Every structure is written in structure tokens, then in C-alpha cells.
Amino acid sequence: MTLETLQAELEHVLEKGDPDEIRLFLDQQNISDVAELIYTLPEYDASIISYMSIHRASGVFKILETSTQQDIIQQLPPSKTAELLNELPPDDRTALLEDLPSGVVRELIKLLNPSERKITLSLLGYPENSVGRLMTPDYVYVYEKNTVKEVLEIIRRVGKNSETIDVIYVINEKGELLDDIRIREFILASPDKRVSELMDDRVIALNAYDDQEVANEAFKMNNRVALPVVSNSNKLLGIVTIDDILWVANEEFSEDMQKIGGTEALDEPYLEMPLFRLLKKRVVWLVVLFLGEMLTATAMAYFEDEIAKATVLALFIPLIISSGGNSGSQASTLIIQAMAVGEITVKEWWRVMRREIISGIMLGAVLGTIGFLRILLWHSIKPSVYGEHWMVIGLTVGIALIGVVLWGTLCGSMLPMILKRLGADPAVSSAPFVATLVDVTGLIIYFSVAFLILSGRLL
Image 1 (cartoon, rainbow, N blue to C red):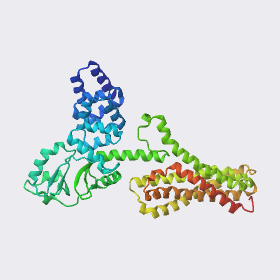
Image 2 (spheres, rainbow, N blue to C red):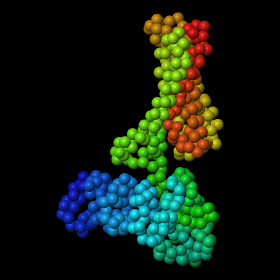
Image 3 (tube, one colour):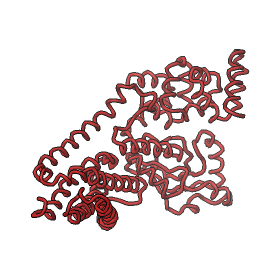
């Protein structure tokens, strides 16, 4: 059934106004389809959630954009809001609350029942962007002394309230994590076998205070649908599931793309962000880049005498600075992406530098050769443009391009790693920032090469 058909049928049942019929229609649809209906018909978003059975409503609500969730919460009556918040998994509830103003959070927490309120306050107590904010306390744990038969009985009793039962966690009497065992191991084992006999002590766990990016890397390296979260004393606190990590990875990717583009990360969808706030996000970097580009004018003023003596040099300024900026932007984008996916680390800076030195020389040689051939070709067509010194002018441009492109690749590759080493976000070394930096230094390289080669001829 197409989205247009679903939309028409929903509008039809809403017009009839029969609550039971509306609930039956919505509960029969896929959760993802209902979410699309909410995006398509925003005027009915709160109504759709209100009419659905609470379990289904919770499933739809937790996959919606944060801004849509906030809009629905504002429209729902307190009783329905309380019902929805209590039904949401703790990690999804925490993700919603951490984006709301503190006054609103206090009011919403009052709507939770005592046990859910305790869990939520505990999760909100962890640092922002930590693994503790992502974890859920809904999991199945057993003791090493339990038999397989007892484990299966525990799973039947408490498993329905757990986010996942693919993995069962083994703890001791102190609550310390000992191991995690896949459920298939229990299903295939004999009923009288003890948990201790199935343990291999190869558990992989996250610390509640780890950065969320650490969890992202752990999931990628270990092919798990869930990982346990422990305290500093190895007490089992909860689990993090793959769906939460995919959400984090998507958020991190969006932020990095925005920073690489030369703007602050947007905390709302583009079309929903107020224009003034959007301007504030963009203007800071534009001002910084503008001030940086002003140094280009300063550099040109410094070489004013050289430009006056050989005005032909000014013809190649855009070519020189754009080549350096492009090579720097290219290198920074490649390095930031490689660091984001874990292909390289700060410790490998020397390997990266060696590769970029070789790459920069080779790329510069290609562009330098093209620049020289361009001057040669133009001289053969119109000799008066460059005059009798066309050869040394061509050599100046070619050699300068090698130096500028080499410098651009080094800046673009090393700056993200330096920022990472200092604890800053490598994405801040965006392509526009690197290009601005290389523009200024590129002019210095260009005119320095020109002074060395053309001194005594044109200069």
C-alpha cells in the first residue's frame, strides 16, 4: 500500500471519528509507515499517537525526529504523556529529555512512576555524550551457579521486559560482570549443565563514562547487537543496543559534515531551525574565515614591489592559491573521514605525513607541469603576453605549484591530527578553514620562489 493510499484512508477514518476504528487502523500498520504518516500529516501527529495502543504508540514515537517528538509532547494531555513516557524504553526516554529545557524536564519527570523516575534520573546523571546516557537497565542476567534449566525459566519470566534476549549476562553475588553468553548456547546445552561450564571469560564491556564514539567503535569491531555497560568497579549497570549506536553514528556523521562545510553543528533540522539561529551558526565561521582571508591582502601588500615590477605574476595568483586550497581541502576531508571510521589514529601521524609528502610532490608535479605547458602553449599563440622571459616564468609557476600543493596536503592532513591530539574535534579543521590557511601561505611560497628565480631578470 502506497503512502498516498494510507494517507487517504487515515483521513477517512479520522473524519468518521470512531476511536475504535481509528485505533484498529493505526495498529494494523507498520510502525515505519505510521511515522511517515506523522511526517506527511503533521497536523494530526498528536492525534495519531493518542489513538494508538500505548505499546504501538511507544514504538512509533521512539523512531521519530526529536523535534517531532517535542511537538507531540506539547500537544498531548498530561495523562497520555505520562502513559507514553512510562512505556518508552529508558534510553529512548533519556534521549528525549536531554534535548528539552530543564524546566520542561522537571515537569515530565514528575509524570513518571517511581521506578521509571529513578531509572531516568540515574541515566540523566551521566555526562552528556557518554555511554551511560544510552544504556537501558532492561536486560536478563543470571549467576554462574545457575543451571541451563534455571536460566531458561528466568528468560521466560523476565525476558518479555528486556530490550533484547540475544545475549544473557553472567554476574556474581556482588553484581560484577563475569561473562556474556549468547542464548543459543543455552538452547543447545543440556538442562542440567551449569552456567560456569559455558563461560569462556571473553566478555567485552563498555564503561558508563566512555564517550559514545568508543561504543560505536566497539560495535563495529565485535559484531554485536548489544554490549554490557559496567561501572568503574565492574558492576553491571545496563546494556547498549545496536539501534542506539546507529542513531549516534548518524548524529555524529551529520555534525561532522556540517563542520567540514565550515559551519557549527545544527541541533535541529535545517527547515525547522529559526532563521536567526541558523545565521548565528553560520556567521561565526564566515567571520573567522573572512579575517583569515584578510591576511591574503596583507601578504600581497608585502610583495607589492615585486608585483609592480613583474605584473605578469599577478595573473597566476588565483591559480596558485586555489590549487593549494583545493589540495588542502582534499587532504583534510580524507583524513577526517579516515579518523572517523577508525582507519588511522593520531599515533600513525608519521606514516600519514610520509604518504602526504610523496602525494603532495607528485600532485604538485602534475599541476606544475600542466601550468608550465599552459604558459608554453599561450606563448606560442601570443608571444607578447609573457615576453622573452616566458621560460623562467613558466618554471616559477611550475615550481611554486609543487611547493604550494605539497604545503596544502601537509596542512590538510596534519591539522586534523593535531586537533585530535589536543582533544578538539578534528572536523573543526574544515575544508574552508584549511583553504584559507593555505591561501595566505601559498602566496608567500609563490612570491618567494619568484624572487629566487626571477631576481636579476624581471625583479
